[in-house]
Length: 238
Image (tube, rainbow, N blue to C red; front, side):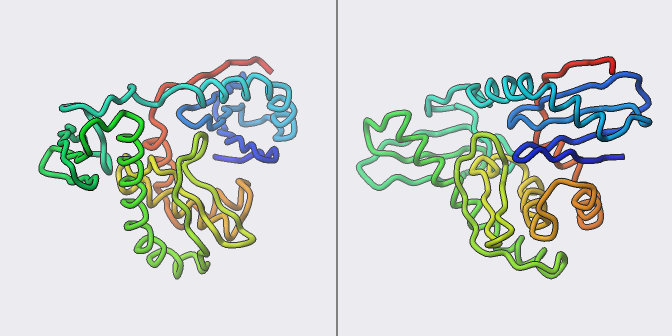
């Protein structure tokens, strides 16, 4: 059973298990918080415990924010880059022409002007990733709006340090992390559905979890695939 504790801008996922102690985890890359708790423990008791550990949670999240989620990129030949979950080897081409990116078989061809530095190369690739998401999202929204019975307002795509996406229920606007274009396409769809569900239920409460399970039964698997990295955690007797 999955429950949610909502502490303002911090949502904690509560998993009920056959255990004696509380097990608090902060999951990279974005600092998502999960707590495994004994099945008999009152949710208010768990809430009080989480509040007592807020300083530790925030410290772990800050560490993740400053850590790079992947090896530093130099944008040189045969460097690995990912597009929709598939690995490509970079092929750098320097020409006195406008920058461009093209996928050719197993290569990501990055065309830049001679002398283009790492920062500018990253900006060019980030802009390309952003366009990939912008091209993919309209079809997903058209697919899910009649299913959820909602209407999406504007869609923004940008670099986000601590979230894969966000939603403003008042305006119907959703924001998506540029890095989603590096993940499998089904992960983007999961985030789109997640944010659209917030138009029905703004918080991460039990109703939100039930709606996600109704619309997308495999959502927890996709979430775990999206965040499949090592975990920082603490075990507590309580």
